[in-house]
Length: 134
Image (cartoon, rainbow, N blue to C red):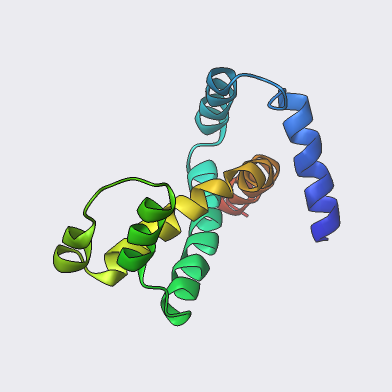
């Protein structure tokens, strides 16, 4: 079940020592996981990344968010004197919304990484068992 999978992913994160380590140490451990599981790690990470990116972009688009206008408002709210009209004149709304969705998706990494770390060994084992001749 999903609850058991989340418990396992939390245990994997704790076992691999990713909690409370520096970003450099955590990155080394993720690289080690990639070396151990290769394609399975890439597939799980890409799937979980896209599973959050696509809905974020869709929500921005369907919600009618005007990315260039949002950027101009953010600059104004920060009290910066910068002309942001070049964005609305030269860059499409969809591109700006896509970049906003990428940034928001990056914020979800905190939850995505433990899930990926927990799922990767399982997916890797399933891929190996499916590749063995019967």
